[in-house]
Length: 240
Image 1 (cartoon, rainbow, N blue to C red):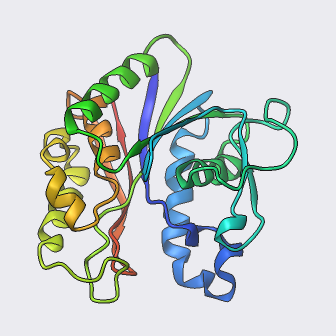
Image 2 (cartoon, rainbow, N blue to C red):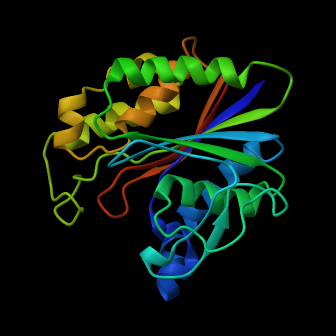
């Protein structure tokens, strides 16, 4: 049974140990992300969807570390007794690392299965995966949460990672409006080529969310929506 779908961004700067004294600059974002994750903190299982350079499925017994981002902050996707032992995988996808970091701070009893889609995954494939995951989420009475780890456009200012693209503001506004309104059709309408050109790297994950909600959610809430570093970050949740 799907209790809620929560969406958060993927920047490593969410982890205080990675940004040191600058952590206070991202307190509002960090608090919003943690509060959103608590919406599914009482679930038995999380299904996590994100994007990356390559597709990957990460099992719930995986352990990883943020060492590749500057600090050996270790995370697991399952409770201690169920997680793997040994050396954490430094190559674990960022989506899985963020999910593990959130799990350990908001839902220590949860197991998380992670699905990473390639940035350029076809929209039809994203929609089908969303429908497939929704069937799994609702398969029985087990309480499950859907966690979408996805960013908006990375070209919103001149200092953004992808520099500035004048088209990105309008696309980002459409994305934020669709999330706030609980509009899966608005997410499904994101155009793959344009999203790639404006570095809207979470497009595929957003469209999986749309596929999981062929009917609009009963409640849609945005808890944070801003672009502090020229990258669109949206935090909120949809209830079925």
